[in-house]
Length: 539
Ligand SMILES: [Zn+2]
Image (cartoon, rainbow, N blue to C red; front, top):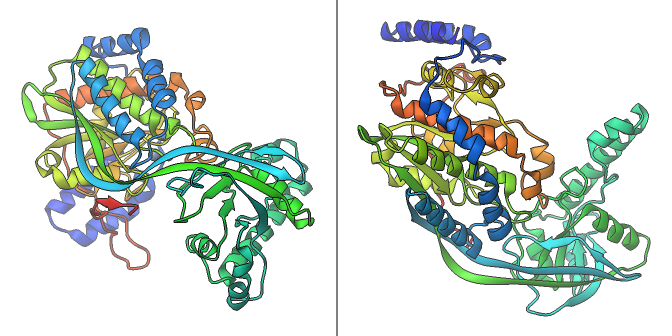
């Protein structure tokens, strides 16, 4: 179907019957954009010794567990500007070198340097309990001391003037700036065990409490960004929040806005405890020790590795995965799994297919989490490579096996991706839903940096394994969440697609499909524009 549509559109384009093209495209969108379950199904391709060797190498001799432990357990999270990020880049170069693959770290910018130290939080009154919590990224510490103080709740007052009058009362206190959650159980758990009435009641209460809290913040005249700064300027000794991720034990851990005092996140359970005790008039006190170091300005890097092409060395097949992470956990599924997938695919390709036709590159990007900065910088800095990328495959949405592949709006993506996929073992291929020509991604992960530059760049999109709730940017994104069977399958997929793309006698088409009509303007939508990398961040 997609080939048929492509041809129609192309023929009309040649005749420059543009309006008709739009009409044809508009008419056909529901068909061509529809999910096509099992869309890559087809007869088994003749056996290919390279493909068989790739599958065998990953099945018999996978290094995934080894490199996952080294990266996630030993080095740990990889927040931009931290020593661990640099350590990870150096580790990757050393690892590639040990596999006989040329690799380098490319500096592309600078970031606020910071190193996380110990965070220790105890409730010491009205009873003793050690609390689960941590400093947010880039938070100031407590200067080597333990700070003990009462906690107060950001109050519900009439208007911004009332808040101005209230502010001086925070002097010497920890201020809680998140709402109380009505339940610490996940929605899945409610669905399993709640009655219809109790579920509806809980959801109604949650919606009302959330709206009331948002209103409390907005009528204060502050935002969640400006409030922590106003509190520390008024003499608060710390800002306390709980960014619950709607699952058991999970909080999202992002960056602090305070400049002088710690901004800490406390688990839903312990935050709720403090909140209820405060509301009941028990004036709980907490003791906080937060060690962290401001390291000034630090350079930021991408790690690039390559297996030189033998026939067309100036054409590139590229693997891609961001290397950085948030640091609440160890970035195991965001994006440790994408990282080890691409590293392992490179290791196998070097061993099984050491003389590729085209040059095989891999990009391990820095600072994706702050806006695709490493990959955007690479696109800006290497036009000579970007112009000649045959294809790029990026993986960055968790540990799951790849189940979606979208043509990103490239008119002929179906032709080449479909052809290469025929070589992938059926048990891997048949669970991938394809969508052609699909829509060009404007963001979300690093493939978008390349799509914006017109490069056929695709996202190997994973089964979610409760990614959004349980691991994405959370304190539970750790080694134990990795599903190695799925990552193994993704390594085989990435390695075979790379091999096929490298061997393909045809250079891929970059022709873009006519974008779907924007219902507001009645005109076709625009291809995503290239965005400049932030080269100096967090300062
Ligand atoms: Zn990610």
